[in-house]
Length: 130
Image (tube, rainbow, N blue to C red; front, side, top):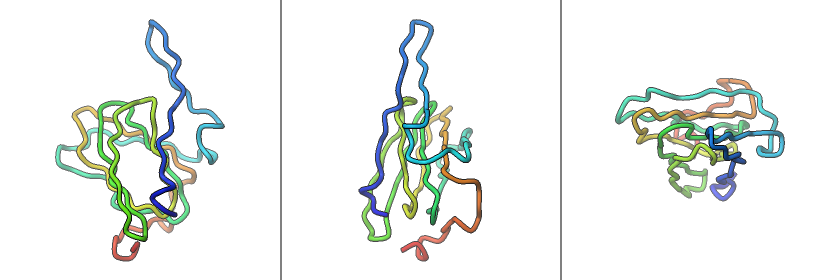
């Protein structure tokens, strides 16, 4: 996969005087949802990620606050994206190295994954990835 396959996706937002509602349904993601998890209380100066997936796709959303996502592909192409809107998510296909950092206080990162956890799917060494 190439860095060109990464994309920001707008999540439909229903505005109401009582507050906004966003919904992720079948046509938003190009895969069936198999696992959902979230990162929170990430200490200042810490980072998450530091891996790529052989097969799994992930969709990241900043439900609260903000954080940066640094991405690179096997050809060495790089980009960095700041997520800070709960109605926008970042689709990361397989074989893309990711690192998340610069978490604001109170930030929450929701991850919607295409597969269940499998350690065999992870590439945790950047040299092996490249």
